[in-house]
Image 1 (cartoon, rainbow, N blue to C red):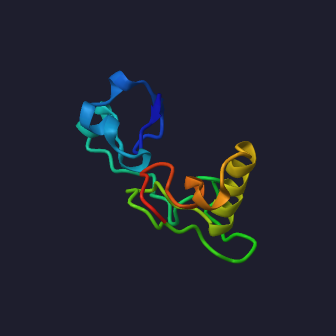
Image 2 (image 1 turned 120 degrees about the horizontal axis):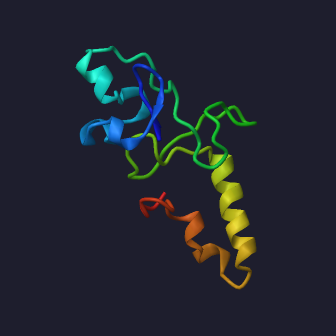
Amino acid sequence: MKICGACQRELSKDCYSKKQWQHKQYARRCRECVADDMPLTLKPPERPDCWICLSNEADERGELPLRDCSCRGEAGYAHVSCLAQYAQSKCRAVPTVDIASFVAWQRCPTCKQGF
């Protein structure tokens, strides 16, 4: 089930063409809306969300989510403070690992590029 960006109804996959199904929510239109040439009514997000805390607002230090990896689209954005907490929690989960060599500090968990 996905939301049509024109009529804003939640519809099953068979209500969309293969091409439309691949689009982001704000750019996706069901077959009916495409046939009726209905305009998109949803707007893309103004700022990307942090993949850790899911906020697009500034963190406690006033910093917005940033991306320093090869992820594309809206993926890969995170607050630096969230990345630090994420890496620390991963280190606590595996206490026998040398912190300096632990990849949570060094690589994006999605695209694997170094920070």
